Length: 75
Image (cartoon, rainbow, N blue to C red; front, side, top):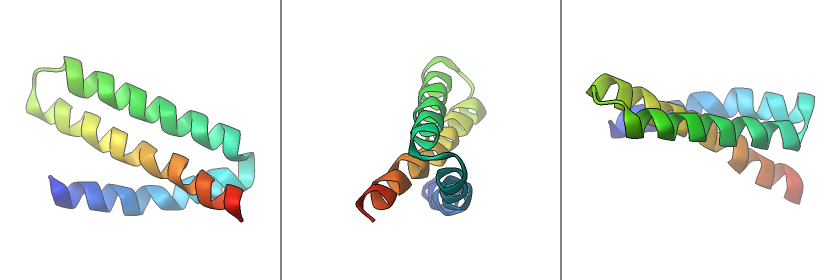
């Protein structure tokens, strides 16, 4: 599972930077928080392990949307 997390972080940084540049930090933060919230609900409520993994990957995909805003703000 650790390797999937790293791959998801790497793959999600590309659209995260695009969303920040195109639509702004507010939309990017909203997308990141929404993806993390939905992923948390899926991982918490669903009993099958496949759904829990999908929820965790959704959380991991939302993380770069918030982290990239910090670097854009300081720049």
